Image (cartoon, rainbow, N blue to C red):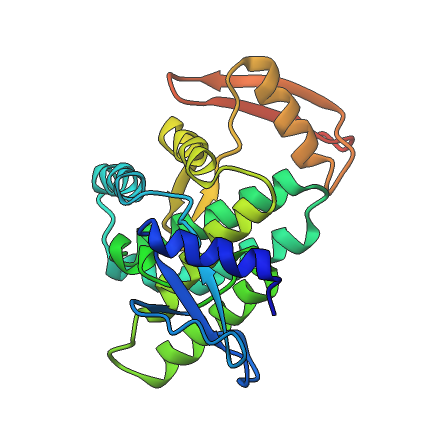
Length: 257
C-alpha cells in the first residue's frame, strides 16, 4: 500500500500522460499490467508509473546489426548455431556463479545475450514490450529459470515458442542494469572483443571460444611453456619455424623427446 503522497504522485503522473500499471493485490504473485483508465481503488489495487526501459529500440537494433554483420562475415547461420546454444549458455551461467566480481558476472551475461542474438532471430520490439515484472528485483535465478524453460520448450516442441528466448534477453539486460552497469555500453564492448577476433568459431567443438593467441615470439614461447607444464616439466624450448600466422615452438623433455 502506497502512502498518500505516493498515491498523489502516481495520479499526477497519469495526468501528465505517463503510462500507469495496476496490480491486483489479492493475487499471490507480482503481476503488473498496463491500464489506460485506472479507477484508483487503492484498497484492491496498487498502481505505479510504468518503469521506463533502459535501452531503446534503436540501440537494440544496432546490437543486432553489428552481430548479424559479424556472423555473415563468418558464414554462420541460425540453424548451425542452435545446436550448441544450450552448452554455450549454460557454460556462461557456470562462469557467472564462479565470478570473482561483478565485472566477470556482467561479461558472462553479455555473452549469453550474444548467443541469443547469434542463434535466434531476436525481435527487439517483443523485448521492449515485455512488462508486468519489477525489473529491479530480477536476479540470476530468473536467468536460470529462463534457460530451464527454453530447454523444456525446445525438447517438447518441434516448432518451439521463442517467448522464453526474448524473456532471457530481457532478464539479462535488466540484471546487468541492476548490477550497476549500462547494458548497451557493455554489449558494445563485448561486440568489439568479438570483432577484434578475440572470439572464433571452433568447428570441432561447434561453439564460439575465446581465442588465446600470441602476438609476439615471446608470447608464443610463454603459451607453449604453460601448456606443456600441465603434463610434464620441459627441458628445452626453441623456435622450430614461423610463418605469417603462426610460431611453431619445439619442446624437448629430459629424455630428448
